[in-house]
Figure 1 (cartoon, rainbow, N blue to C red):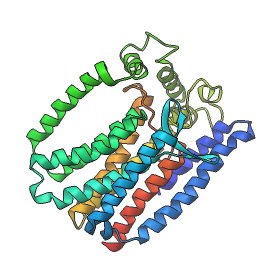
Figure 2: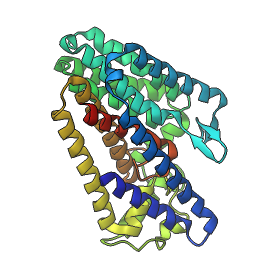
Figure 3: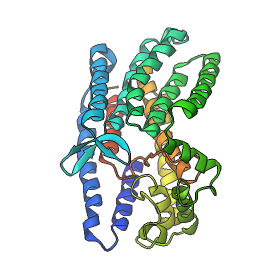
Length: 349
């Protein structure tokens, strides 16, 4: 039910954003097509016995190599959108491999950590799991998609904590992360990424440039009030002041047109999802299932938290959609695949 409610809100917003131009309804129709296909993917995945992934190292590595190849091929044959070469163009549709990489990484790390459970305290397993993650994250950074790369790293860290790593190792990782951020600012971050960070710290420095998106997002959110202005009646959203209202800033669009009530509905739906995933992890019959549930919850929580924080002006704009709500076929299919695996664990557990 929470997933259905989130999908419904997303489709309603896509309908609203079409306005009086019926041609813009194609966004909504395409999203509905992805939802139907995604439901089929979830059903098919649920019927497959998850224990095949738990028992076969070859199958897991085949999945890892497949995802790695897709991410490598998209750098050569992919379509560039908003400066990122991250999509395969398939007729009128596009497919983004990194969305599937998130779920694949959860599966791969769940097997690795569950297999090494008795000696996970050894530093070598932290290093190996980091290298596995870096193999995917490095290709994502080449697109360059900083947002997805950070999400992949967050998923690894969440699953590492759940596996029982020592506190001193966690502190060491935090120190290394701080060093990497400083090094990234001087040697790896692009000028566009630096300007977004600067706009967060100094929002009045470039109000019509780097800070424009978040200023408009806050205006849209603040103007919605308790019940919102109504579907199709949001001035910031409908008149084009709010950038990317179907994807990166759909949370602000919902806040303007559906108000605090709409935001509350979304928050409750995510809360129920997190609670059910947490309960599933606590009731898991083995470490593989427990770690997978933690990883899937990490994917959802990190993506939702980053999207909302981005819309509230708490973090820089890094191009992350709201799960099940923002437009995006790849995200819909990947999330349905992820929940299909969880259903398989319930059916065959």
